[in-house]
Length: 74
Image 1 (tube, rainbow, N blue to C red):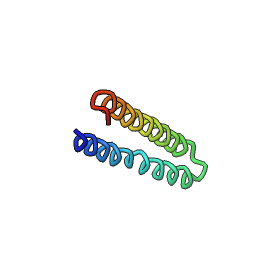
Image 2 (image 1 turned 180 degrees about the vertical axis):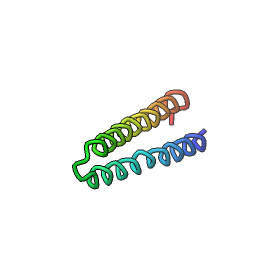
Image 3 (image 1 turned 90 degrees about the vertical axis):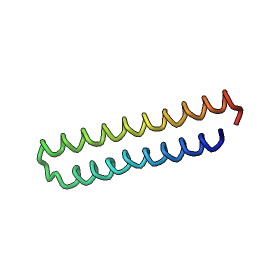
Image 4 (image 1 turned 30 degrees about the vertical axis):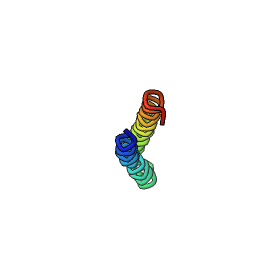
């Protein structure tokens, strides 16, 4: 079962990269907005979504580790 936990941790680790990409994208959008309120709002929405995605991915990782540790004692 250690192999299953390793695979799940690897997949979740890759999923965590997605919000990081969106943080960078939102930051670039924000910096290049040039004072345009529409672009600033879009950048803020991207950054908020990236933060929520990162929180969800980290919670998924924590839940999987707690369950595997509890059930299998790793």
